[in-house]
Amino acid sequence: MDILGIPIPDAGPVYLTALAVHIPTGLTCVISGAVAALTRKGGAAHRRFGRVYVWGLAVVFGTMTVMSAIRWRENAHLFFIGVVALAAGCAGYLDRRGRLSDRVHITCMGVSYVALLTAFYVDNGPHLPLWDRLPTWAFWLLPSLLGLPVIFRAIRARKPAS
Image 1: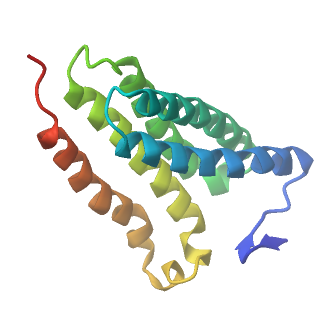
Image 2 (image 1 turned 90 degrees about the vertical axis):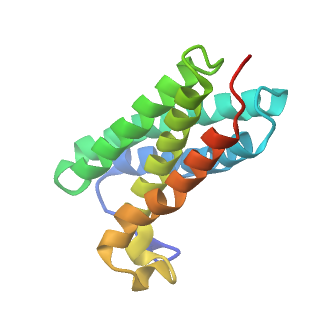
């Protein structure tokens, strides 16, 4: 079976149920993470969308864990990217008030978002229009090549607390 040109493995009802939760929650993470990054830091919208991102990421990690357990050989690499995304997201969320420093919060949340996008493109990039013309290494590196300069710019732009 395939949806919008993306093949869906026939791995049973548990896999399909996890996938049915995984897809909309992943989209929620992409949108809420972008909104949190683009809103005033410390403001109500930033905090609200940041919370939605982290909780959504936990659900994405849970569903991805189920799908990886069912299809470990095909999905192990995605599981490990998910571990990075969740660990960085949790670390960034725990330092949301910048107790260590705003740099830690920005870096961890940014790395989490980049890892989320990397997993998506590694898994789906070969089936997406235009992306299907890129070499495999691009799915692994482009999210970082685009995301890391944005993270560094956000760190530089953030004024240290006085």
